[in-house]
Image (cartoon, rainbow, N blue to C red; front, side, top):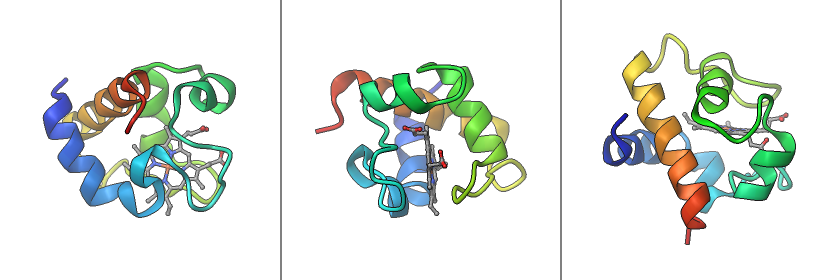
Length: 88
Ligand code: HEM
C-alpha cells in the first residue's frame, strides 16, 4: 500500500472528522495508537481499518463504493503509520 497516496485520500475524505488523528464526533475514539488498540474492532492493524472504512460504524459513513479498494488500502496504511508516528 502507498502511504503517501493514503495521506491524500485521508485529507480529502477523513480529515473533516479526524484532523490530526482526532475525532470531532466521538472524542475518545481517536486514531491514536492507544485508542485504536482499545476500540477498533479487530485491533490496531490495516485489515481492521479497511473493514471499518469500507463498512462504516454508527456515525461514521461507509466508504465502500465511494472509494476504490486501493484507495481504502492506502488510507488504512496511512492511518496505521501515523498512529505509530504519533500524528503530530
Ligand atoms: C472511528 C477511520 C472518515 C466519524 C474511526 C476509526 C477509524 C476511522 C480507524 C476507529 C477509531 C477508534 O475506534 O478509536 C476513518 C477513515 C476515514 C474516516 C480512514 C476516511 C476514509 C470519517 C468521517 C467521519 C467519521 C468523514 C464523520 C462524518 C467517525 C466516528 C467514529 C470513527 C463517529 C467512531 C465510531 C464508533 O465507534 O461509534 N474512523 N474515518 N469518520 N469515525 Fe472515522
